Amino acid sequence: MNPSAQIVEEINIKNAIIKKEIFEVKQTTIENNYLKILNSFNPNIILNIGLNANLGVIQLETFAINSLKDKNTFSTISSSIGYSTKLNTEQLANVLCMNNIPAVRSDHAGNYFCNYIYYQSLEWCKKNNGNALFIHIPFTTKLASEIILKENKIYPSLEKEKIQKAIHIIIDEIQKKEWS
Image (tube, rainbow, N blue to C red):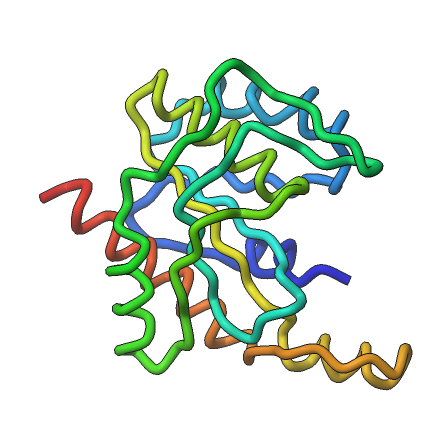
């Protein structure tokens, strides 16, 4: 029950060529497909979107490190220790907050697949002169309500429309910087 797939599927931006991919949260799926897709599409901007079920805000990730914790073991992906996005995550978070969308800058994308795919994005961007960002989103309010009823677990959430608006604002802000 991950809302990021639905959010990605519904993104529609005028005056932009968008390639949308939804990955199973599985190392081999990402390893076998992600870099091939980036190389075939050669994007200027990469937005990765994933779920952080513990926060009720949009979380903009600044760094990804060279590790993947899978089955409680760490593995390294390549030789570089880590990468940082060239985008100003603090400024993007502030713009979202000014638009009544709770958002924070985060220093680290975690130890699992969010970090894993973000690291690959940033490494690809370093080699190909692109920009990447990882956006952690919370559960949508509707999905959080369904989970409460099914599993009796409570999670923070945001309305789907706010999450969608946040993605659009982020893309607009990045485009302003890219083309100015």
